[in-house]
Image (tube, rainbow, N blue to C red; front, side, top):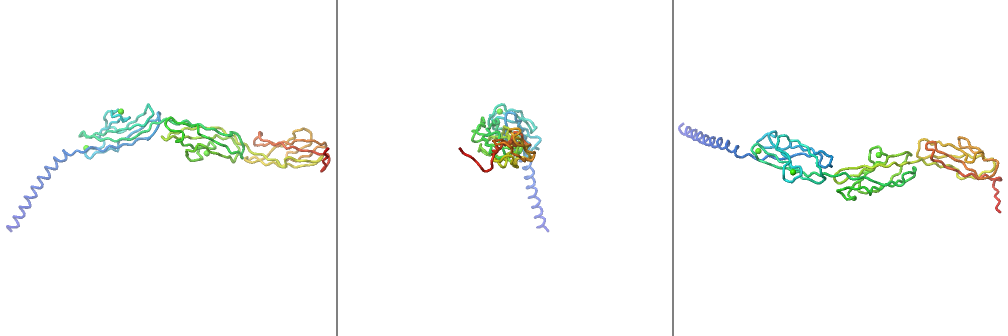
Length: 307
Ligand SMILES: [Ca+2]
Ligand SMILES: [Ca+2]
Ligand SMILES: [Ca+2]
C-alpha cells in the first residue's frame, strides 16, 4: 500500500510539472509565433488592351492566425515597387492601364500582426491587331477558287508572322477554319449567293480584330448543244443546266428578233433563211448569268460549198 501511494504521488507530481510547463509555455508561444499571411489573387482577364478593366481579387489570401476578412491588401499595378492603393480589407479592385505594355501586378497582404506577404502576376496590356486581307477574285461562280491573303494584317507588338488568322467564308459568325499563322487560304462555294467573307486576326496577347469583304458567287449555266448547225426550218431542243442554285430554270430568247422561234421550254425552230443566229438562255435565279448559243442555219443539209 505504501509503495503504491508513493508511485501515485510521484505520478501526480510529474504531471503537475508537465502541465505547468505546457500550459505556461503554450500561451506565450502562440503570441510570439505569428506567421506571415499567404498572398494570392486572381486576375481577370489575364491580358487585354487599353479599354480593358482588369479585375483583381485577393480573397484567396489567408493567414494562420487571422480571419481572411481582417487581412489588409494593397496593389502595385505596374510593379514599380510603389503601391498605388492604400491598405484595405476590401479584397477586390479594378484597374485600367493607360499605356500598352507588360506589367508586373503586385499584391501585398498584411495581417493584424503587421506581417506581410506579396504575390505577383504578369499582365499584358496589348493593342489589338489590324485586320486586312485581299480577295481574288471577288466575283465568280460555283467553280471559282477564291483566294484570300491576310498578309497585310499587322500588330503594334507582334511581327506579322506571329499573328494567327481564321476565316468565316459565309459570314454566319462561325469561323470555318482553325487559327493558323498561314495567312493565305482558298475557298470554293457550292451555292450561289452574296457572302460576307470574314477574317479574324489574333495577336499573341489574345486580342483580335476582324475584316470582311463581300464575295459574289454566281450560278453556272451550260446550254447543250452549243454551238449548233441546223437546216432551214429544222427544230432543235436546247437544254440548260444550272449549277449552284436551287432555281434551275432559264428563260429563252432570240438575239435576232424574228429569225426563227423558241418556246419557253427551249424548243427552237430555225428560220427559212440561212445565216448565223443566236439563242440566249438567261438564269431565272440570276439574270446576270446568260449563255449565247450561235446557231448556223444552212440552206442545204450536209452540203457545204467552198469556193
Ligand atoms: Ca499571421
Ligand atoms: Ca506602382
Ligand atoms: Ca461560317
